[in-house]
Image (cartoon, rainbow, N blue to C red; front, top):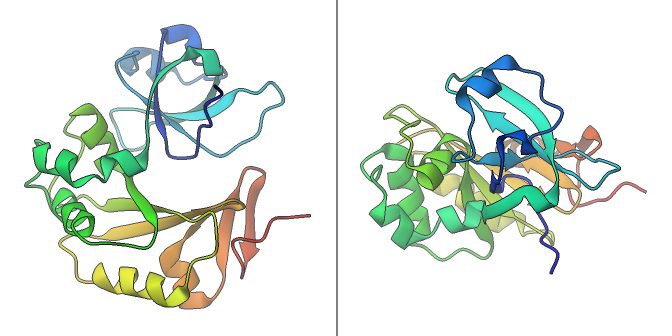
Length: 205
């Protein structure tokens, strides 16, 4: 069975040399197979998976590629948003996890998950978040979603314990929910680069 890897999925690899196309020297110093890399948006003629590596410092980010047969484990943002996992987390007292738990205890008409630093911390147990950390969320939207329902989601997070950013993932790309609700248009991040869109579900011809 072929596994489909989606942007923001965290994947673990079977060897240090499984990472291809990375030249940043810090990667060799800090990354090992016990740490995941994150799937990003890009295209490759050799069927490789586009990935990003996270360093110990905020500015340390490196883009590379991985062959599918090097992947040994996948954790999706959706899995990280499950209430039982959040309740068991050693970071349950941190504001981003508290906010995520409040969302997880409600019913929403879409699948959603946790990305960014909070997602990384939940997946690895590494304390990369603190009291002032943001919460990055992802809504999976294979079909257009009702604007009114998205407004309810956004309003629920307006006065949250921490700053919250929601990305919406469509078949065409990913976009910032707040920007689209505010402006009626958004910079859609696609595998071939960003483009300005009023309809972020529209695929390019």
